[in-house]
Length: 334
Image (cartoon, rainbow, N blue to C red; front, side, top):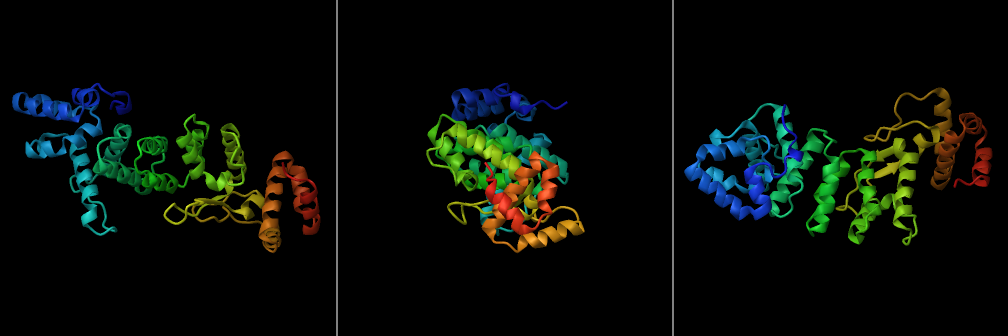
């Protein structure tokens, strides 16, 4: 069974020296071992517990000392991935990634995960390293649909913030997962003791928290977000607004038609999932005729009433629109 890389921090000698003494000491150790104990350094590089940052730092040394063909498949694929990512600036943006060393998609996926799992805690290896991680995250989320790394991506975003490094590419990839419930990983930072951390969390979730008073306590913001997600999660459509488009993006919008009928929608298309009954189709046509602010009020009231009593909700849903509005206005949703 393959070892869990996340729990092997510092076990490999190369990682241990890099973490405790720095990359220059690790390079020196590598060169010394290559000259005196080549088999030992190859074994260290091939071990399951090696972390990606150590391999990344040693890329040039590995190529100079021509031991690439003696590395295991994981390391060789990882090196090919890094080369491809860092060469993309010299190619067209639409050029596909190429991994000729390995035709097995599962192996590429495994190596990409290893890069993120063992490399996401390292912040100080330069622009090329950050670019490699950003592209790897994007590949895993966009190409492989891997959402299991989102907790690592969220941590990496806030670690970049702390180290005053760019994090917007990671934010884009995070939301491109099209998983509304992953936003709880960002909402956790609303409760942080750190002001910068809280402010970034508020900025990323601003489309949800925009109606809150700026002085609202962080605990209140946290629970306000969770209440909003619980109420609207099944009805969210990913429209993909980013900070490149606007300073206050709304990556998700609430599909009011779905919320009104209590029918979940596709996060990708915004369309109600499944076929509508004749009754639902009639109700929806009636709903679409009212003004946008009225739709919001009706959809919100419908959602709350449905959670309180299906019987009363069904009765309310089928009374004339003018009566619905009177009830929704009189019984304001808390």
